Each structure stands twice: as structure tokens, then as C-alpha cells.
Image (cartoon, rainbow, N blue to C red; front, side):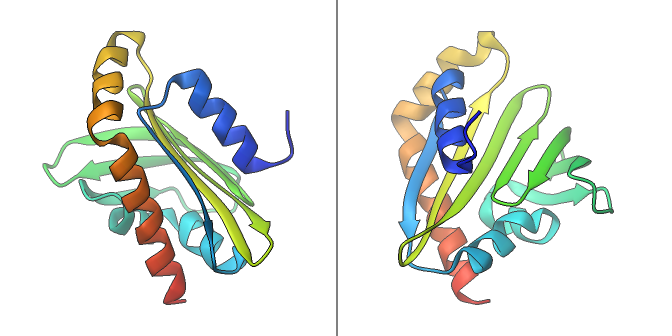
Length: 150
């Protein structure tokens, strides 16, 4: 497996036929960008519009349990894999991920969102065609804005 987290996320997005994938060069230092991306409990509700809170189990382990609570009150348990430059979050229905690497003059950052059950692939395809690109760019823009404040 590649040691470049962004390349790994790009391959994962292709394999999952992700409805949401965005990758951009951000003119900000890697440390500031990843500080926002890795602070899941605080930052994820600011980055994902339909998320009210994301409760992550305390501790320094790179594998954690989390609970996502939507604005509607519905919740979903997630398994989180968090390492420098790499975040993968999986529930029974969705996969989300972020990756970052230092790049000349800033940071290369990527985000993905995909459904897990094959039965949901048609909805994922439709979502990707209608909203995925725009939502992915909006997510990256919010990461950029929040990292610029640090």
C-alpha cells in the first residue's frame, strides 16, 4: 500500500465508486490543515452540514469508536482509524475519509464519502452526479477556512 495518504484515499474512492470525492492543493501548512481534519469531535460538525455532533472515544489510540448524531437526532456508530495525514470513518452504511500530505507551498488535501451496501450504489451514483462534486468542494473550502483561523 502507498505511503502517500492522499493517493491511498484516491484509490479507495475509486474502488468504492464514491459519490463524493474532492482533492485540492491548499495554500496552508500541513500542520494547520491536519489539526482541523484530525479534531473530529470539534471540527467535523462544522465541516458536515447535517452533523450535529461527532462523539469520539477519548484516548490516543489510532483506532477509536465514535457516534455521529445528525441534526435530525438520528445516530450512527462509527469505527475510526486516525493517523497522521489519514482518517477513515466507517459505519454500517457509509464510509468517510480525509487525507493530507505536505506539498510545495501548502498541503494536498482530499475527502471522500461513499455508501457501504452495494444496494445503495444507485443512490450514491445519483448523489455523485447531482451533488457530490459541489459538496466535496464545499467541504474542502470549510477545512481551508477553519485551518486559516488557527
